[in-house]
Length: 371
Image (cartoon, rainbow, N blue to C red; front, side, top):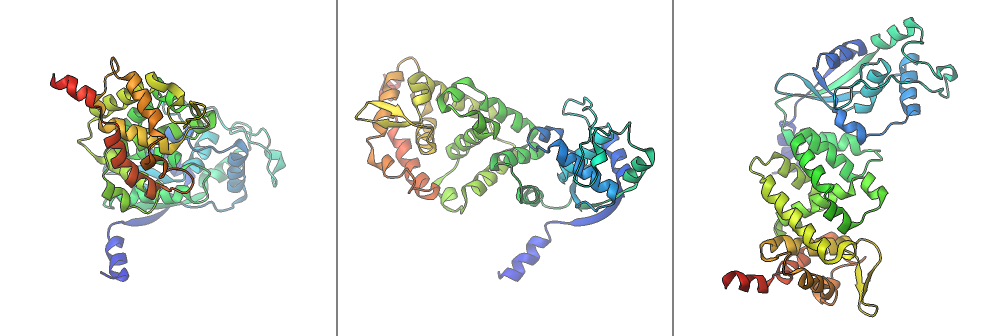
C-alpha cells in the first residue's frame, strides 16, 4: 500500500458535515438535553473571566468565532469535541449553564476589554436587550463528525484539536478522553489516584497533583503491568503510547476492575509500609539514606516488579525483606545503568521490565506456600 492508498482508506473511516446554526438554536439544544458539553471537563479547561469577556465582546462586535466540532451519537445528540469553553461561556452569560450535578452556575459578570471598556460589570440582566438579541442571532459554524465515523478517529480528533496551542498537560487531555469514552472508568481511576498509601509513597507536589500527575502514575502502573515489550518497542512516543493504551482500556469490556484495583492497593500498601515517601527516591550507600525527589524510573522498576509478583508478597511477613530489596536495587547495575538523564523511555523500559519482574520474585513466600 502506498501513501495515496492509505490516505484514501483512512479518509473513508471518518465522515464530516458542516452546519450553520444560531446561538439561540444551540442554546435550545443544550436546554433540551440534545447537546452534551461535558460539565466534568470544567475542572480541567480553565478560561479566565477576561477570556470569557473577550468572547462576548467578539459576538457583540460581529467578529467571527472559530467553528466548533461535535460528534453525532447513536441517539442523534451532539457531543462536544472542540468548543467547550466557547459554548460554556455563552451558556453562562445567558444563565443556563449547569455543573456536573445539574446545578446552575452563577451568571457571568463581564470585565472591561481592550475595545469595550464599558463591558465592565455588565450581565445578561443589565445589558441592552437589543444587544442580547444580536448575540442570540449570531451564527456559529458547526463541524459534525457523523455517527458512522470510526470511534478511535473521533477521539484522535478531540486530542488534536485540544492539544494544539493548549496549556493543558498530556494527562489533563487524557482525562478528558477518558470521560468521553468511559466515565465509570474515569471515576474508578480517580478514586485509585486518591488512595492514601499511593499518595504517601509518591509524595507529589501540589502543582503535580493539580496537573493530574497522580492519575498519570496510576495509568502507567496499569498500562505497564498489562503491556508486553513488543507493544512498548513499537511505539515512537511515550505520551502517544499512554494515550493508545488508555483508549484500549476504556473500550475493553472485559477489563477486570476488581482484580486491577486489588493489585494496585496491595502494591502501594506494601510499599508504604516498607519505606513510605522514600520508596521512589535515590538511595545513597555512603549515607545509607534516600534523598532527592520522586524518580519515575524508580517508580517503574519497583511497581512493575511488585505487580508482576504481587501474590508472593505478604504484608505480615515480608515488609523488612521488601525494604532491603528496594535498598539493594540501587546496587544492581541492570537497574542503575538504565536510568538517569541518558536513558529515555524506550531504552529504559524494555530493559527494566524483565529485570524488575525477576528481581522482585519472593522465593521465601513461594516456599511458605509449598510447605
